[in-house]
Structure formats: C-alpha cells, structure tokens
Image (cartoon, rainbow, N blue to C red; front, side, top):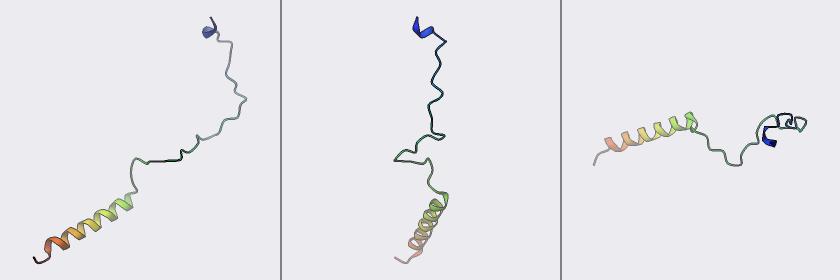
Length: 55
C-alpha cells in the first residue's frame, strides 16, 4: 500500500517564501479607529446643529 509508505519524505530543498503572498484585495476586519472617531464626531456635531436650529 503506497499511502502507508512512511519512507517517502516531502522535498524540503525547495525554496519557500518566508511569508505568504499578499492577496490583491485585502479587507481588514476593522476600519481605522481614528477614521471611525472622526466620522462619529462629525455626525454628532451635525445632529446637534440640526436638533437645536429654529424651525
């Protein structure tokens, strides 16, 4: 049975890159925290301006 033959070893002489290749499209799990804070601050200021303006 060939699949039980443990005398075969993988070719370890082949060069392997130290890091995996970077994908062309990278989607991080979280956006930058500074960007999120900036957007939240602008939305909060906009809401306050529009909430307190006279009708």
